[in-house]
Image: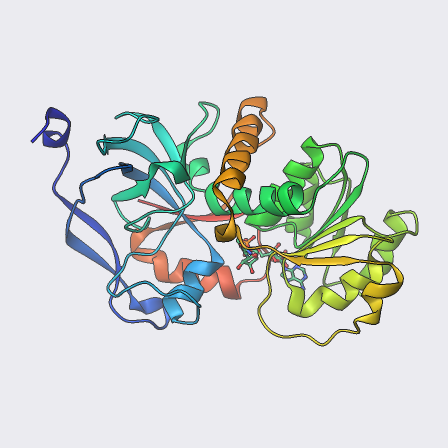
Length: 333
Ligand SMILES: NC(=O)c1ccc[n+]([C@@H]2O[C@H](COP(=O)([O-])OP(=O)(O)OC[C@H]3O[C@@H](n4cnc5c(N)ncnc54)[C@H](OP(=O)(O)O)[C@@H]3O)[C@@H](O)[C@H]2O)c1
């Protein structure tokens, strides 16, 4: 056993899911073996884990790709490297890191991650903020820049800007010189979206709120729309969009009927976004964009609510059922 390994604990606690179902299927297990990194993996001592809506879809069993049971949920963590596999060159013990995906689950004291899907956390950011980077910022960067092709001077509508992905979209779009309109469903959310840089905010629960968005665009509509709830909003997005506008669907929780003619007159592009569909080159591009954002200082994850590992079921219930997002939900380990 190496000197590095001998310093590491062998038993840890983590959430385990032994059957798919309601949030309560997540139980804390205090007698799990700390995994060992091999090949390209790093072992991370987790300080905080991000909670994403997809964690809840997977836990409930309603997702296309399900893990083998039992499993530990969680893909985003902020933590410190404890040990590295033999092929790892980019990281060493003691590095502060964030992940976009883990191999053994983030809701626990230690996790293994593929080092190509991890990044060094800038000194300006806390380990809690590290847990808020992975899925939200990479998804936002993919939607706004890689697939959305955002151009300086364009107007972007972030339809659902108060949540984790939405706030990341706002920061990325502002940094690239776009005019940003963000929506939220509460005053607290609207204030947060404004404080993180949006030029105009509109309440997506207000009457005729799409009219306010069109007026804020000077009558012609957004060039780019990032949509967090397409089953509710897609038709509105098509009605509002500027000629040749692009509508990027990040989130949808059901079906919707739209009139396809809305896409024809203005020659609109509607495109789906799937973070885990990224190619190796796109991962590189996204890592570079996120690194630049951290070092320039515009990438500032906002933590909304914090939970203990024991309260992970409550975190899952709240991320789906509580109206009024205020940034990222994390679990402190
Ligand atoms: N495609 C991908 O690869 C990918 C990756 C990551 C996430 N996602 C999906 O993207 C969505 C957002 O994720 P997240 O982590 O940001 O979740 P989140 O933090 O829970 O945020 C949800 C956002 O949706 C907003 N919202 C609620 N009702 C809305 C409405 N009627 N119109 C517009 N927006 C509305 C919320 O605003 P208020 O609470 O203020 O009303 C909030 O801003 C989720 O559906 C998630 O599954 C997809």
